[in-house]
Length: 129
Picture 1: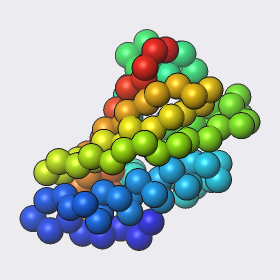
Picture 2 (picture 1 turned 180 degrees about the horizontal axis):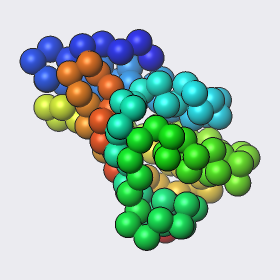
Picture 3 (picture 1 turned 90 degrees about the vertical axis):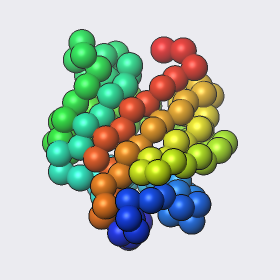
């Protein structure tokens, strides 16, 4: 996805939908470099899967390197990973993607964007972990 500046830090449907389509496609291609292209260098990620997969009790990682290592491990473990987009919602500077993830598990992920249109913080939420 080509980063698009967010006008006055306000989200719009086109930006949100374009992000959703590209993000899902990048994950379904198992292309970690492409996935990471959507994020700032110092972004923060929180997820109960970080506790399970990376063994980090807080469930939070900061920075591309830390999150890349976690996601690489997850992709190696879940070789048939496929996401199915169910809904895209947006706010002022955020997007929520509701999707069906690994093993059919329902997930909702919240992405907060900076003014350059890159994710600076994200949190994943799951039906059950």
